[in-house]
Image (cartoon, rainbow, N blue to C red; front, top):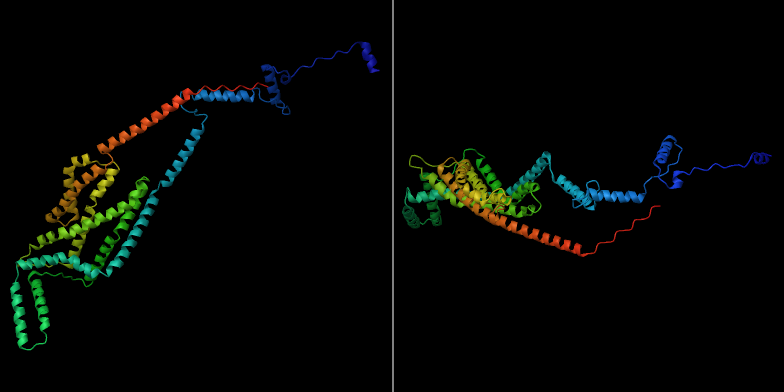
Length: 431
């Protein structure tokens, strides 16, 4: 029935369908805006996707990257390339290493405590090892003063040496006539009498007033001998404390520097014992007269000797100290020569501080100190970092390296120009 009614009214005309923008393929901004508005207002509406294709976005990004990197050798700041990533990784690793190498004040104090503890333990071990030879070392340390007394006795004897020879012959004859059985002890008696007269006339002996003074003198000598015995290890601990502030290639010199430091320290002490002590004690003993007798006290004499030994040991470290500063580039031979007059003045001041308050001992130390300063000038000349010939060689090496880099870069450029240009990739057709 409905069909008949429709046919009776006339033919049915269908309304044309309006194509959607997605189906039409024509980009209409008004339609896109309307669709975006509809999509934003209707939560149930389906998203129609990006208007620009992925290929266009990739091509635009490539063009932007090339444009931002124009005039530079690498990619722009916004798009870091592989080289930038590698550099950032290397810088992070370097920062980590630097942070690991940095030490706070508490870390330095802890390191110092460990180094000092090890040094004291080493000195204690050396003292125990040397205590068994304390008597012999005590006699060795007293020998320079005893030698001075004997020399003065030979020049100004109370009884001549011939008197003791005549006394020995006379006693031997008399005791032989008497039939004595102790003829073998006559020489011992005469020698003891001669030594006793030396002590009486020149007071050539050491005295101590405190009961335990001689015992502590042996302890002091054992400690000093133990320090010289383990001095390479002690200097190794000192250089080990300085090592964190040095470069890796400079830390390889720590063990040789420790050994050389110990050798110089021991050489200075030996110079003081064999050269300075005889002249110094002879000078001091020359002031004794018949009314003034020189009777050295054991503790004071020992302190005087040990102070001089340590002073000369540290003074002999000067060339090594200059070598260290020269290798760091802090001093040069030309600068040291210009400041020679100030170094001489400082040498006498240091000698006055390290030695007893007398001009003779001061000169005995200032002389070697000035000589060692001259040695340090030549050390800086041969090993210094800021010497003219070393700077010239460094500049020549840098120029040669730069020339090689320029030649390699030019060869690479010529090779790039000789290759044919690559054909551009065909762009894919848009869907």
